[in-house]
Image 1 (cartoon, each protein chain N blue to C red):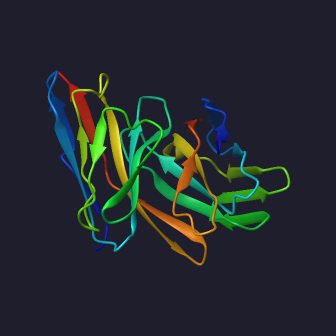
Image 2 (cartoon, rainbow over the protein chains, first blue to last red):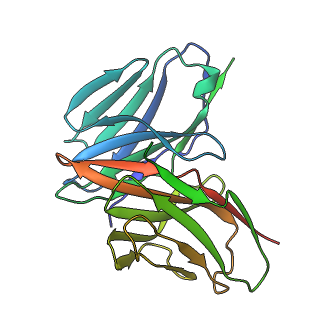
Length: 112
Length: 114
């Protein structure tokens, strides 16, 4: 069974700090990795995806992937109260698969 | 604009009643999914379909049924056999491009048993 593990939190960081969210996955054949943000009562929205080892930056967000360690992370720089949400890590096995496997999410609270 | 439409946004079910949640997409995506989310929990897969007239059970299919008669539509019926149906239900569709999976979520239906 493919598994995606995240620390459920809550993770509390002060405004302006760096928030670090982590995710591990069990399927070594996984090929692409996604971070979704979900506000309470809303549907998830895609904020980052990554498929190569290393870092990928988009504004205040940086996704980091280490396939050897089966580890993916999301860094949020200059955290804002509006970043307070649950962050879901999702993994695709690729090879023609349409389906993502989701972690349970990490709840982030940014304290003003 | 393309997207996924879920309806209704809120739904109330009496004990012993079947209810159907609607999900329609105009993205021309082949695959569609139903997830259930409970407070503080992640997404749990109920059913998915990768092609018209075919669907597969997910992790928590008991008490639910689906159909996929058209590419655009994937309705979910919550039957009376589902003993704890109060939850937030999300529909999604997906496609692949150069090996990358693109998921689109609907806005969700919140089902409450009264």
